[in-house]
Length: 352
Ligand code: IPM
Ligand code: MN
Image (cartoon, rainbow, N blue to C red; front, side):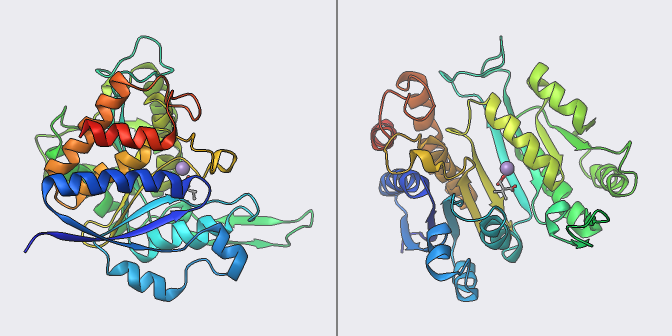
């Protein structure tokens, strides 16, 4: 009779499994409290499996993941695997195959959290980056010619489709409309140089925007936008941008909200299976030491619950995380929290 969600769990590499364990602890506590069930299916993916078997993601796993209500991911990345193999073979492959065309990255400074921005507090830092997640320079189209010679040519294509741009921009308008904030959407692009690709973005932004008269349309070139993110982050509500710019600005966003210890994100397919993760990497040097901050992974559980329609439970997780940052942790940095990884998970459960 109750609601049951099938969650695919990918602990992954490095500190991934440790933070996921704390996230699942919180998920289990909040599900009991709120009255829904979770059915967890673990998936062994990551650098260890790759080194053991040479496999990144078998096709059968993709099919299994398509049957989940959502996916909860720790981290992918292994110091002994050449850069690009796991990123492209696992993370990007899942984003593409599951058509998770939005990467949603809230940037919110919680009470009690230190920001490197002088004179800025939680009232100034609260916006969301909507990043296109399946196209752009990430599409992997290109090639090398005469590689390794003085005449080498390297091509990497920035792919922008009308469909891909429109669904991303439309999602951003809907998200801005639903969000209880300034009702302002900023397009972040580089129309002064990328006069084909970003002209498409600008036209679609204006066109779709006609359907959302209550939303203020704003534009910023990416180079200026990063400046404003540091100087006046309070001007932003929702920012929509392409894959690569979104990758870069959301790490800057993570820093001003207190770092990778707190930053979470969602890879969304609004009509399919979405995947939620702490956006920090696998942090191999901290693996197995019980010192990494699990709050980003716990915040990712909050985002996942919100996406599944469990708004009440999502709100409770957010509140519990806030109360822990506001009243308990000395710092969000690994090893400096004043608590271990597992203790922070316990604190959040207690705050629930
Ligand atoms: C992220 C990461 C990935 C990306 C890497 C690991 C491929 O930086 O999720 O932002 O560039 O998208
Ligand atoms: Mn990134």
